Image (cartoon, rainbow, N blue to C red):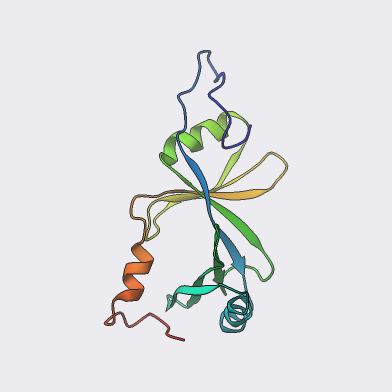
Length: 154
């Protein structure tokens, strides 16, 4: 099953409800040096820094390369790792659908500025995150707030 598959059979019979819209919103990239990696990605024509924060011992930045998904560059993720983050309408429903098809919950649900998220793994071990987008633009708004002591300006 993919995240976009139509409703199918569920354990115990019947059919599951539709999961709604699914969007590949972010690629979460592990970095040994967020600042250097941000500079590298900003060299891509049309790329721009959406936001960057240092908080809780982590340095995380969002780079928009001109088309989705937005790149999240983070020094608290394993260097060289890539975690796709899909925005969904209903985290619980999507999690239940994927678990019914053999996926496992690796972590979550956990709070994020934009809404609750979970990391799930396929039966073969591939990890993806799903994010219920309750507060789109929360990070952009926090970055625009000049009084936010955690934002990092270029």
